Image 1: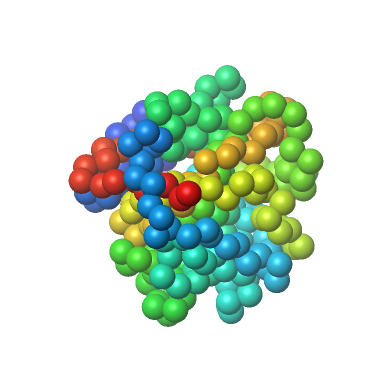
Image 2 (image 1 turned 120 degrees about the vertical axis):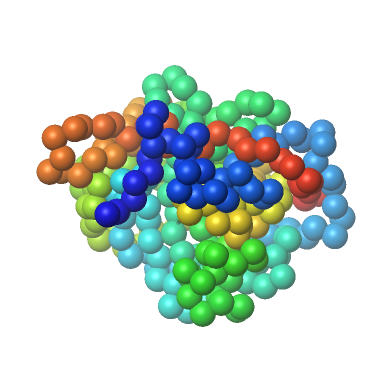
Length: 261
Ligand SMILES: O=C1NC(=O)[C@@H](c2ccccc2)S1
Ligand SMILES: [Zn+2]
């Protein structure tokens, strides 16, 4: 039956709770981050991204976003430090973005959204045998969120946008070797962190979020290339441009956001 959720009027974020009741849970993501209310915590050390041995495998259109997958069969590429009690293995990264001239990030900062948001997904292979087990556990995933704002061309993003024509339709995938996500990081790794969830169904409350304060810069032209992707498969007659694939901010409930120094 495949995924019966999407980002449209009928199947979008406001309807997800019908099949996924955790959508109304106590640690849902994304959230609006209010810098002045974030608690500066001296116990929060820096995060370390050990990506030098990472092995990218493919780039795919899963009908919700464009995803680059990595070989996660060993601890070759991990994130550690910061709020994390052990290393989390790099699994994949993907993006969320808006329509022309609209916001598109999932997290917002003091009520302001960015044009897009990159999510780098890692899983706790120390405590869990498989990614799927980790994805359902309260300390199973660590997702690094990076804001994308509009400006000049990003010097390395073309490596991704040049491949997008190969994965225009849902269900398409193509080889994508030798890409290191380190080239998509901003200069500062200062971050906000809080306990949250997957931002798409099944919305598991399994994510330690690490949201970088400094955005990276991409051009409108580069972002426009993402919008030529389609939510639909090649054989479907209903053509739907892939855009506005973001969940809006959710209630903070009893949580606090902590800030690195
Ligand atoms: O940060 C997130 N963004 C998403 O699209 C969600 C997700 C869902 C399944 C796998 C990986 C990520 S969780
Ligand atoms: Zn995401």
